[in-house]
Length: 219
Length: 194
Image (cartoon, rainbow over the protein chains, first blue to last red):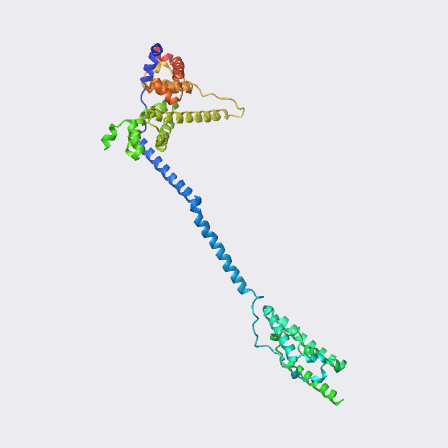
C-alpha cells in the first residue's frame, strides 16, 4: 500500500495542491429560505391531511346527514299540507243554487216513486259535488268555460222544455225533474251570471212551464 | 451557550439537535461542512451551480432526517454519504440529458461528440488553468473511481471512512483508488513532463 502511495506521489501532491472550492457567500441565506419554504409546505400538507382524517370527518358527515334528514322531513310535511287532494273543499257563498224542487213549482203528484227520495237530499248532494269540482278546477275558470257553461245551461233548459212537451208527464221522475233544473254538468255555479237578456229568456221559459202546468191541471 | 456549542464535536452537536432541536447546532454543522462538501461535490460534478444545489439539498436532507442519524457512525461519513448519493444522482441525470440533447441534434441522427479542447502546454503557466486541466481529467475518469480518488487524495479521508461512505469493502476501495489514479496519471502525463 505504501508502495502504491509512492508510485502516485506526484499525482497525489498535484491533487492535494488543488485550490479548495468554497461555498457561495449566500449559501446559508439560501439554505434558510429553502428550509422555511419546505417547513411551510409541510405544514400545509399536514393541515390538509389532518382535515381528511376519518375521525375529523365523522362530525361533518353526521351534520350533513342530519341536515339532509331534516330537509326531507320538512319538505314532505309541506307537501302534505299543500296537497289539494287532501284539503277540505272551500265553501263557496257566491253560488246560485236551487235549494228546493218547490221553486220549480212541480207538483209532487207528477213525480214518480223515486220522488220519495227527498228532493233536498238530491240537491244537497249535487251541490257538494259541484263544490268539489269547483275546488279542483278552480284555476281553470276562463271566459271560454264561462260561455260554454252558459250555452250548456241554455241547451239543457230547452231540452227540458222539449221533453216536457213530448213525453207524458207521468213519466217524469223527481231526479229527472231536478236534474233538468240543475244538471250535474252545469253545476259550475260561479259561471252562471246571466245578463239581462238571459234573465228575460229564463223568465219566459218559466212562464211557459207554468202555462204548461196550468194546461195540465185544466185537462 | 454559543461558545459551548462551537466547542462541541460533530456528534455532540447532532445529538444536541436531535434532543433539543437547537437550530444553532444545525447552523454550526452547516458552517463546518459547507466548504468541504462543496469542494467534494464540485470535483465530482465539475459544475459550480449544480454543486451548490447538491450541497444545499444535502443540508436540507440532513435537517429533515436528523433523527435517522445514529451515533454509531461518524457524522462526517453520514453527511458525506448523503452528499455522495445526491451528487451521483445529479451526475447521472446530467449525463442522460447531455446524451439525449447531443444525439437528437440533426436530421440524420448522427452522433456528435463535444470537441476536446486540448490545452497547450506552452501557455499553461497559470495555476488556475492547471486546476482546470486537472478538473477536466478528473471528469474523464469513470465515476466509481473518481469518487474514491477525490475522497482519498483531495478530501484526505482514510480507507475505512471511504468504505463506510461508499458502502464498499476496503479492498474494493483500494482497488478502485489505484485504477482511478492510474487513469488520472495517464491523462495528466503532460503536466508531469514540465
